[in-house]
Length: 226
Ligand code: SF4
Figure 1: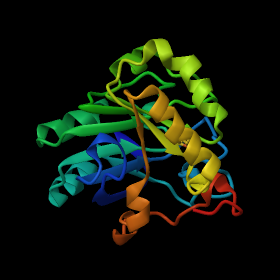
Figure 2 (figure 1 turned 180 degrees about the vertical axis):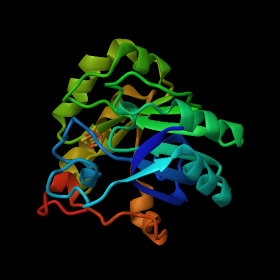
Figure 3 (figure 1 turned 60 degrees about the horizontal axis):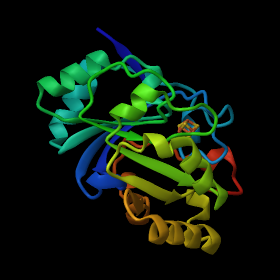
Figure 4 (figure 1 turned 180 degrees about the horizontal axis):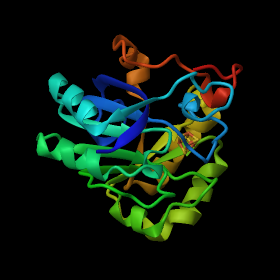
C-alpha cells in the first residue's frame, strides 16, 4: 500500500497538448527539485508557498475519487511527479479502466505505466534519453526568443515525437516578441512544431473544482502573478 504527497486533485479538462478540451482528473503531486523561475505550480515546492500540511493519500483513495468523476483519463502532474514511485497508482488506475497521462520534465527515471507522456524539458536538469524516447509529445516553454534555438540545439536529434508544442511562458503570453518568435519559427520549420496555449486558464476551468489548492504566484513571484 503506497501513499503519495498530494498538493491538489481536481476534475477539470485538459487545457494543453493533443488532448486539449477533454475531461480529465488531475492529481498534482508535491515536490520538485528544479525550481524554474517561472514555475506555474510554485506552491508545490517554493519555500514561501508550501502549505502548512501536505496530505499523503493512498493510491486506493485517489483511484476511488477519479473513477467517481468518470473522466476520459487521469493526468498525474506536479511538481515533478517522476520523483515519486507511481507504480501502484498507475496499476490501480489501469485496473479501473482509466488511461493515465503524465506531465514530466524528463529529468527523472519513470516508475509506473503511462498511456501518454508529455515531456516538458527544463534547463535546470537535462531530460533522460530514455524518457525522451518514450514521450508522446513535447512541450517547450518559451521564455525568450533564444529559447527556440537553445531547445533546437539540445533536442533536434531526438525529436521522435510527432508534435512539439511551443508555449509562451505564461507571464509572457501577451509579449509580442515571444509570440512573433514562435509564429516565425513554425512558419519556417513546420512539423513537428505547433503553437500551444494553456486554454484551461482562459476558461478558469480548474477553479470550478473545490479540490484546487490556494494558487501561488508564478514562480513564487507576486510581480508575475498567477
Ligand atoms: S516548471 Fe516543472 S520542472 Fe520547473 S519547478 Fe515547476 S514543476 Fe518543477
